[in-house]
Image (cartoon, rainbow, N blue to C red; front, side):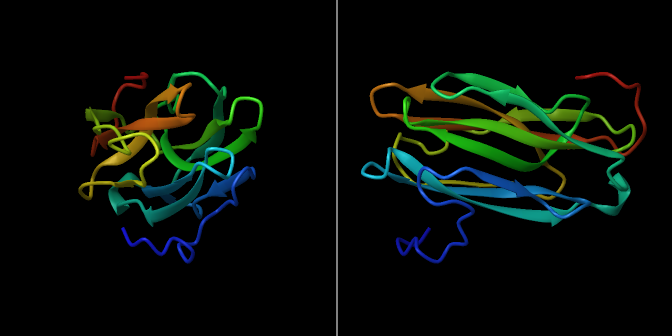
Length: 173
């Protein structure tokens, strides 16, 4: 990732709330962030979307999932077998951290399988972070994050899954 981080299409300024949603029928495929100590120990964020493969069909429903509180560790996976298609976030000066909420979309009766977690992104606190979904056919279902109270930054393990090509019994796997 280049060090000229000014022209990256950031969705927020430091300490600012943001709300990002992929266009209808698209899901998140890339997430990048850049940390600044002097700007409230906050990150700039940018996201990329891509249309889902034809076999997945149109999303039949989209919603904002649970809010994940600032200053805490949390794991969040889209309910109802949803895929992540957006993010909203609000900054809290008191903890120098953000609360997070995923925008999830449900695709008919397709179910996740072969799920995996990425390694920590960034590898070390306060570094630039970059997730690009490794191959077509994997989708972001959520994330597990740790928060360093000392460094006031987060590391993310993103939860990636494939989706079945067939309708399956409807359960939260």
